[in-house]
Image (cartoon, rainbow, N blue to C red; front, side, top):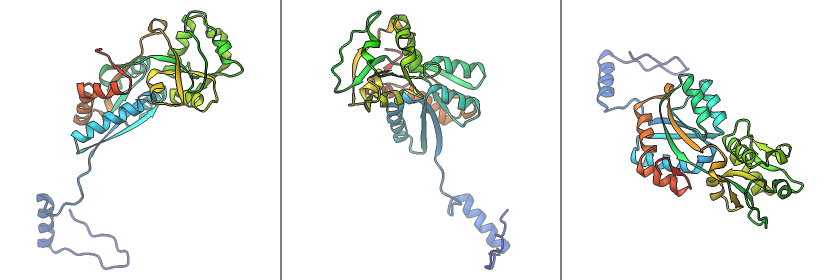
Length: 270
């Protein structure tokens, strides 16, 4: 039904019956489109540590599917998981820790799920630093800090911090520095503290260290020192759609795996 516009001080447009039907027919056949077709929007919640990689994969997906728009949202996995639990709109969720994905799955908020990526945690210092340290049980972490603090994602909820604390505990040095940490809201904030020289050393992912020319890797923690660092991917049940499933499949494709490798991630099948 075509309605007249409200009177705004100008004469309203009055349609004769035949003109109204002609306009309806034109709209139906596309001769006179009511509005431009809007692209399908897919919102991807992803761990901050995957920012550049996810942006590159999303761009590749959009290039192959021009009728789709991908909108990534990056933060700590814990923050994103809480937002999903609170009803935030999202189609896919890429977490840096399976625990947060498990919580959402138990709540019945997820659809298809698969492990996607692997990562490592490393100790970094400013690029100009001369610090040399061997990451072995009982290593002198407190001495390496000097008067400074250890930059680390909050180990109570940020995955990189969870893995970092686990590694330090297994190597017997966490108690040396537990009270001397600069806890951040996500791993990128920990990287920034070291890159700006505000913290002498920090624990971040290897992939984060690879994208910054302001820090250098002092040492890579043994994988045996912490639980496996796995990034699971899932479709959010409330955002399940054909487009979401297509993007889910693309993220698991060989083309996407090649992009993730460029940013230092290992595929779960490697």
